Amino acid sequence: MNETSGVVGIRGSNFCRACSSVNLELVLDLGTSPIANNLPIYPSPANEPRYPLVLKVCKDCHLGQIPEYESASEIFTDYPYLSSTSKEWLQHSSEFVERVLDRYPNLAGSYVIELASNDGYLLKYFQEKGIRVLGVDPAENVAQIAEAKGIPTIPKFFGEELAGEILEEFGKPSLIVANNVAAHVPDLIDFFSGMAKLCGTDTIVSIENPSLGYLFDKFYYDTIYHEHFSYLSIDSMSRISQKFGLTLFDVEEHPTHGGSLRYWLSSKKDIVVNPSVTYIQRKEFERGVDNSSVTQTFSQNVYSRIYELTNWLNSQDDASVIGYGAAAKTVTTFFAANLDEAKFEMIVDANKLKQGRRLPGTGIPIFPVDELRRTKTSKVLIFPWNLEKEIVSAIKQVNNEIEIWTHNPLRQL
Ligand SMILES: [Zn+2]
Image (cartoon, rainbow, N blue to C red):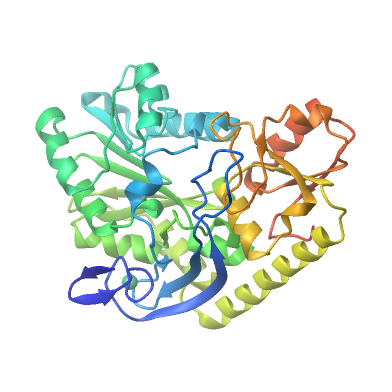
């Protein structure tokens, strides 16, 4: 239970985690599922608790959100995801650095800080350009990996308190990067307040996140999971930034994670706002961010995609399918579609931290991708559709015979 501004209840369920409004609309009910990124060691009994996964949208600030049942410290202190395992993400990050340096050549004046810097995948590119960097990541295991690569990393949760400590020791940064993190922060208010505190007049903030508009447009229900508390829209970003004296002055669309937005913020009073902000916001509204009849169509489409997947799997023989990718979206899909674990021989995943574990809530073991070489199973089902291209080529390298299927909610199986 949380309490904010006098409103009592569960944040994200009874009141909005950005503006505290109680005016939340239920959009999608995916039933219950276990915490997606806590992968238990294999074999151990599958007795993880399950929590409701229900998406609501605030009718006042248009933030999409789910309730939180586990504390962030339980979820993120031993995080099994390394950003460097995705080649597509590394490419995207390297392009981001080139673009930022083109746009803001004076970054070297101070330092670049990344919040949720993971294993230092992005800061490494800035460092190679001779720019000072500082990472912040609460997952101690990944912070240590970053340190070993020479990326200084503070292993703590970011918020107003840590911002104060950083200011004292390092001063104001030239650039604050927060990619795919704001959505994972339970206390958005504290997070934005911390960023605003770090901002000097010339500091630029760059935030990237999957967009609520794309989620509605492409039926990407499997991007909803318990660690992903907020589903940001331009309107919600603009309002929460304003609250802390930051102006949203530019927005860009990117194809990552099925459709993300990159937001640019500044504390400069007279900053010119690019027309892209209003233009893309209008598109988001058309996609259902403030339109209940569009979101009803969205939820009907999601339920029918889920039904289709359940039927497909039920028509397969026992132990005849290998799942690819023990991602959070795999867990969401698995439980939303009530998939029969007896149909799976195993799940394979390239991330070493996930191997030797099992999919939460099931007894399905996770093996290295190389197991595809030895298997007699004829079908592989890819869950992380966002990495489909590189996964298909990785599968073909070890097994050219196996049938490849992808569960992408945007299209039929
Ligand atoms: Zn709100």
